[in-house]
Length: 147
Image (cartoon, rainbow, N blue to C red; front, side, top):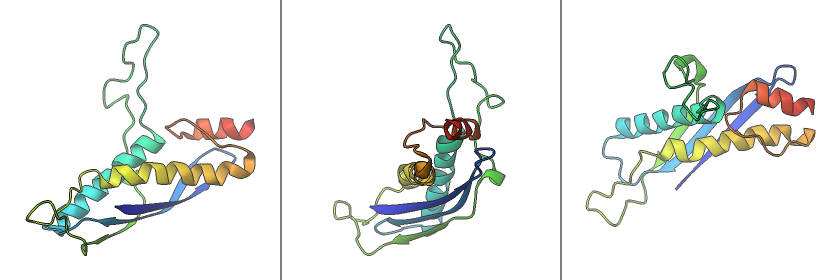
């Protein structure tokens, strides 16, 4: 269980999205190693940024993967990652294992992508835009704003 909230600004001239804030709060049960838990969540949030804003599998006319290498496939870099707030709750340990721990490997990825996409769509609502396919590139957002 948890909650993630994203705050964005969009430059209507370019379609560029600025992720001003991302806040996450998760129930992790008994955090055996809090630093590892935090690392898992941070990594998942960065993966979500990639999914929301840049990662896209491109195929050519013959159905061949057109961006199969890291030179062609966009992934987030350190300078793409904004500061974000994260905290966790340990007051509800898991009842089905003796350690009381809960899985945290997907916490960042499950909530951050929809939080980011919904924040962008909320910002675009006044322009009558209610859906854009991921990744939310500046080009797609700008084109949607044009018309």
